[in-house]
Amino acid sequence: MQLDLIFIFNNMSKKLLIIIISVVLGFFLVSLIGYYFIIQNSADTSGGGNSIFKNFFPFGGNTVAEIPVTGEPIIEPTPPEISNYALKLRKISAEPVAGAGVLDFKAGTVVRYIEKATGHIYETELFSPNQNRISNTTIPMVYDAIWGNKNNSLIARYLKDDNQTIDTYGLLIKGISTTTENLVSAVKFPENLNEMSVFGSSVFSLEQKIDSSVGYISNFDGSRRTQIWNYPIRELLSQYVNAKTVALTTKPDQNTEGFLFFVDTGNGQIRRILGNVFGLSVLVNDLATQILFLDQGGAPQMFVFDIKNKSSISTTPTTFPEKCVWSKKDRNIIYCAVPQEFIDRDSLTLWYRGFVSFTDDIWKYNIKNNTSSVVESLVNESNEQIDVIKPMLSENEQYLVFINKIDNSLWSLDLTK
Image (cartoon, rainbow, N blue to C red; front, side, top):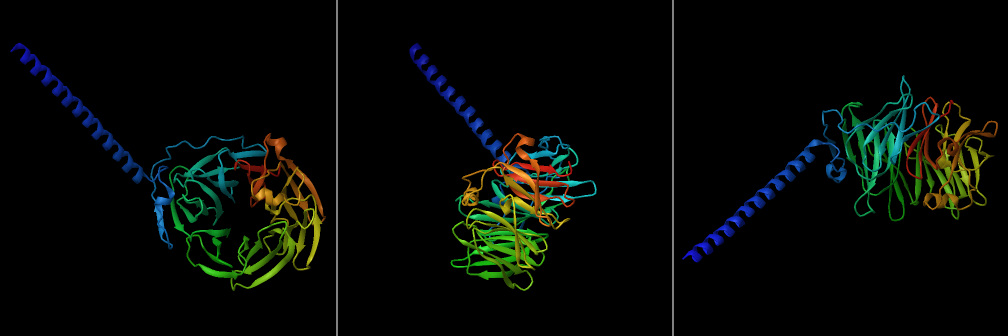
């Protein structure tokens, strides 16, 4: 009898223990699930940095999706000052950037840029140490961005999960402030646009067809989309030169003759400006009167072509037009990043493909006197190898702003020092 009682008691103790453990585990599991949904719901409604870009915007058409404002001060601290703002050469962002825009105010020059990894948008004053994040919306893996509309709009491009499909969005920043989140509206452009360029509040986009390309101009929100180009050439680069002109150039290849066309944005009229130039690469001035171009028929040579006089002058040292920017204050001045290394016939193609990098100096060309001079050795000033892409001048032309192709860091050079 005593043994039976002991057996029953032990059996009940085991059952009770199992019940207790089950209850505890169940309670823990329910709590964990509840916590997950609370966090998930918070992330979905916060409009902050946890939002995923492609989930915000519908696919197809010109539907506008607005990313909600937090309405509170930015929680994440603003980025630390990368270098002293008083330096001649300043690293604005050590984090990779997809693109930047420059705008002058009464107080001085301001740069806005978007980070590649997060899509967060920042604003930096070049005349002070102030540097703030103005949008916390996460747009992961933006590989290219083009600013316009007085830096209140940009074209953001990125690859979808298949690593083949190019998605393009026009982003409009509303309620600009350096202390609170801003509203960002986005419009999805058609997929797989091969080329984009911007002038003011207008956008040029190029679609590749089977045996041709079709070009359109529109606003940043996708409205007023008008076709201005349809031609049996597929591989083209664009430059939205001014309100009346889009320049289209065949993609440079040293073994292929290249062509440059001007397209009238009003009536779509096409003019061939340059042709039969091997490996042609160009940069048109803002008046569409002069063209800096590279000829790779033999040893690479750089020229300035005057459209009215149909004459060319050789300029040295040779670099890529992609590394240059025309002055608007003095039409005879061009600023270029010039590699210290020797430029060969295939250097531009290898550079485009990422097989080679260069160490650049900044040069100033005067095409009126056909002279050139070194402005700055970037490596001596920074102790870093800098391979310049996307150079731009501030409106007052005090600053040259550019991206380092090697690590996509953002820099400014004070040309007055």
